[in-house]
Image 1 (cartoon, helix red, strand yellow):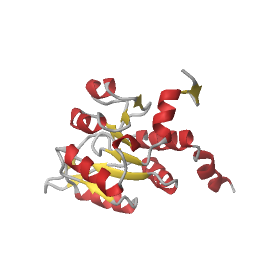
Image 2 (cartoon, one colour):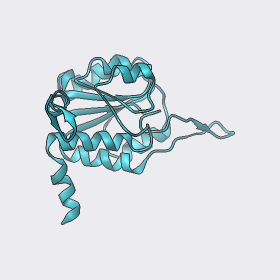
Image 3 (cartoon, helix red, strand yellow):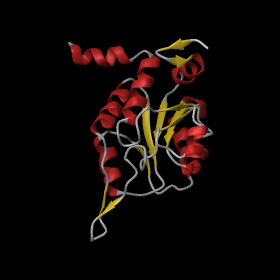
Length: 181
């Protein structure tokens, strides 16, 4: 297969047509650890570079959405700060959220990518055009992924995905150029 930027032609073709990046939260945008205080308040840690990568990717016209099996106020706050409009929380059946999302954005499933880390993500990962696993994902998820990040969830893996999409869609240098002027 032809390699561009170290990637196969098959991966390049899948990425070229992407219009939507769907992210899981726990284990993808976070390291998967759940923190609770004595009052039951939940805390999550998000990586700043992941957030900036999301903002940059959205500037190129690729929409970003979140589908999470859990519900958390901190996720709602973080996604709002990133300008992410499509946030589905508390959806253990991620297919219903996925179908709603595809309909709202009016794209084909093949024009979406999904980043997951656990078996709860597999139903969506098997329906999108590009299935991505973080490198510390469950082995069943890694086995079914089209691409695996080099970084673990919550540690810059989402930025890695955003950069890959921008590079393979040809928008990375334009985005980077705004910082080099």
